[in-house]
Length: 379
Image (cartoon, rainbow, N blue to C red):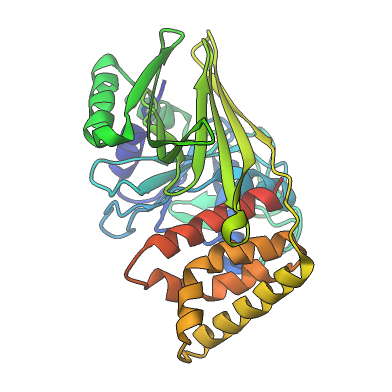
């Protein structure tokens, strides 16, 4: 098994980006330009590495290789994006890799582009890049290729050597378990379990009981062998169970109007550990949107858009409007679920304002609402 933290260190030791890896400060997949540039680099790396993995590291300052980190990212969107825009798309995995030097809520994103024996090209226009364009890597640059472009094996040996040097061992595994326990306070109930005598999984979360059911919040789950964070949440409620070969995470979302809030199952994630030293992750979307009074929802939507409009114009909020700001993320999500398709776009307009509030709870709610929105949209 490859220790992904060690793999990232090995890749970064090459300093300059090259034809088998790239590094970025962050991804901007919600913007046309950011989406198109990401697709260009994926396409170029895939074509330049037909027989080996290639990588993109997210959360690193380009010039000094400084590890700054990004938020935990759910990868449900990426493979859909690749399949929609690329001809002969490679298989893509996005993993969240924690580093001891980063705050608990930050990770390094590792995009793995798996080898593809076919030439990858744009299936349709993306920003200024035209349909059928083929990209390849020349050093650290992703360049358009000619129509007679041929796949060449140029990096297989060096990438195999880098990956071999990142193989996990008992020392790294034990150190990872101790790090996990030391980084989580006792009230977060850090635990571990060994699956198939090969995989070590650690998890932690603040336990609470609601209607005789056990939930966890502020949940952190890591596969120690690969040093990959499988799940992270600041507020969401989660139920956890496991058996001999599987670890099961059921994520809930709290929705409602005032005192009518209830827990609704959102998604189930099952991590299956196999005898051959591999594992796979299966997700099952569970959410069924609740329905609330249409007149009340219309009132909430109008109030929400009024507040966001004032925020955009830097106009002062009334006392009641200011008190409603912490409810903006959840209210926008509820409005979206009731057919107000622009509610999430409205919420994005208030991101900077919410982010700058001294109490970060509202910003955490914003990120959780956007995460739930992505799951609903792409499921």
